Structures are given as C-alpha cells and as structure tokens.
Length: 373
Image 1 (cartoon, helix red, strand yellow):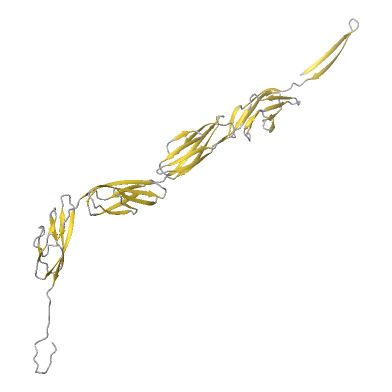
Image 2: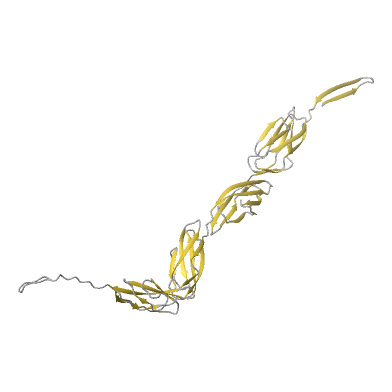
C-alpha cells in the first residue's frame, strides 16, 4: 500500500501553500497452520499445511530439534523418536516480514514393537507353555491378543496354553497400544510332548495250579522304555519284559504291569486270571522186570486217567493196566478234571534183558594133560 500525506497552509485570502509525502507499506504475511494431531504410529509421516497469502517462504519447526525451510506450503516429516511434539511454522513474505504460527495440538509419536517369551514345561502326554508379552509401546499397551497356532487364542500379558500334540506351531501376538497403534509378531514354536506309554499284557485268563504261565508285556511308546515292573496279588515281583509264574493255590489273581519311559511317564495295566485246581494223581513205584515178564501198574486219582505211551499196556484209561514192555519204558499217567486241568505222575518200568553166556567147545584130554575152558 502507498500512503500519501498532504499538508496545506492558508496565507492571505486566495493564497494556499501545500506539500505532500508518500510512503509504501508492505503488509506482513497471514495464514492458518494445520497439521497432523493426536497419535502417530510407527514411522508414519506427519503432514503440515499452511493456508496463506503474501508469503514467499516457510520455516517449519517440527518440535524435535529439526527445521526445514521451503517455498512449499505443504510438507511431511517423519519423527525419528517417539514422544510428544508441538510444531510451528514461520511465514516470511518478500519484504522479509515474518509471522509465527504455532501448532494447535501436540503430535504424539508412538513406537510399538511386539515381542514375547515362551517357556515350555513338558509333562506326560502334554506340554504347558507360558507366554509372556515383552512388547514395547512408548505410550503403553492396552491389549495383547494371542493365536497359538492350533486354532485357539487368548488375551492377556501373561497366558498359559497346553499342547497335546508335538509339532511346529506358528504363534502370533497382536499388541495394541494406548495410542491405538498395533504390531504383530509371528514366531514358530517347536513343541515337544512326552509320550505316555500304552501297556498291555498278553496272557491266558484261565489256568491251573502247577502250570508255568507266561505273561508277555506289549508297550507302545515313541520314547524309550527303561522301567518294567511286574507284581501279582500274591506277592510275586519281577522286572523283566517277560514274566513266568506258577500259582500253587487255586483262586482269582491279578497281575499288574508298569511300563515307564526315560522321560518319567508311566502306564499301568492289570490282568486278571482265574487259577483252577489241578487234579492230583499218584502212581505206583518204579519197577524192574525181566524181558517177557509183565507188571501191574496202578494210579490213584479222583479224575479220569489216561496212560501213555500205549505200547505194552493192557489198557490206557483204567487205573491198573498190565504193562508188558520189551524195553525200559517210562509210563505217564495223566488225570484230567472238569476244569480241563491236568495232573501227571510217572512209573518207570525197567526191562532186564536175558543173560547170554558163551562157553568153549567140548574137548578130550589124556590123563595128566590140561585144557583151557
């Protein structure tokens, strides 16, 4: 603007003196400053804009110790560190006049970084994992959401989860700050689960007294087995995978087997067996006979009898067969009761073969001579 000042002096009537002076006035710059306000997340740029007239250049002060001089009224800036910043801008016109416009509201720059720790506790048949959120957020966190990679999820700073199957699981943590900013971390978690052995007993469920009964253990496990223990309800113990036992008294017994792995996991299985009484049988004493002779055998039992072998016997199912063997023979008598149990005894018949003698031939000698017989 040009300002003119005129002065007038009135002297005698009709005589006027005057003078004037002009000055040019440059108006200072004017405008309105707008910028990003509130929270700003993880290295995102803040925007700055000045609505102005009569401005030749701008000095943007971002409030973090950095400035930028430019002729553009629009600019962006990335804050290197988290914090709260109040920007301002200086408007400069062509005459060098300046106007400082402060920012309306502070800019809160957040930095958020997700992180967690996982500690495994291996049990038998499962593994417990305790997850701890170690994330960083400059303005604090508001929520922690977990995805355990097996279709389940949870929330919280510290959470625990149980895995029942070994494998590699992709665990995700989504962290949200008080600023509304968020970050996600995905890590592969290799989970080891100690196997619980599955034990079984292979053995008959009905037997008889005096029988040698075999109990066989069958164990399924992905881990090595280092403990095998047998015990019976009548106090017999054994530590071998195979267990043989003879029950001398009839009754119902339980046989317990425990299998343990190198990781300290166990399984116990019980096998029940009924032991029936075997029949008693008493045979006559062993006997010697001459070839061609015979002898009467005898056996006493309350159960039916059967003799073997049948060679040289007058009958095989009677209690007192006559034996006429040609060679020495052990005769076994078996008694069988209604429960199918057997009892045995043995009679040995020793056959004495005839004596054979050879003599020299007849001989004639004179008186006074001798002969070798």
